Image (cartoon, rainbow, N blue to C red; front, side):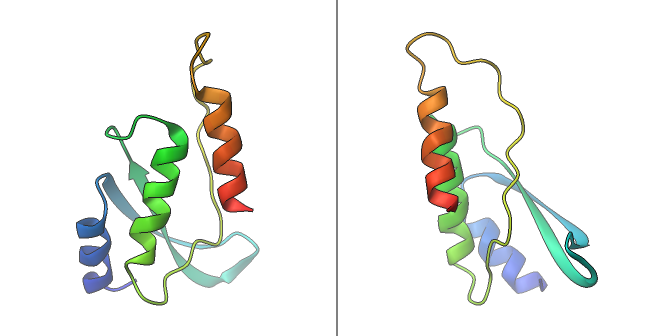
Amino acid sequence: MNDQEKVTLKEASRADIAFVDDTLPTNADVPVTRIEFEDGVTATLAEAIEAGFEAVKAVPDLSVPGLSVPAQPAAAEGDEGEEAVNEAAEAVS
C-alpha cells in the first residue's frame, strides 16, 4: 500500500487507522498491509465494520482478504450486541 492510498483511506474513514506491514497468513511470501480501524464513533459493531468496508472501497484495487474482530464485553439486556455480530458475519460472507 502506497502513501497516497493510505491518505485516501484515512480521508474516507471516520476511524483512527493504523497501518502495519505483514504477510499473508496463508503464504508468508506475499506481503500485505494490515489495517487496524479504531472506531469510537459508530453506535454498533455492525455499523463500524460496514464503515470500515466502505472506507476500503474508496481505494481502487484494495480488498479485504480477512476480518478479525476483537472480543467485546457481554451485551447488556436489550443491547444490539448479538444482532450486530450476526450482521457483521453476514456482511463478510
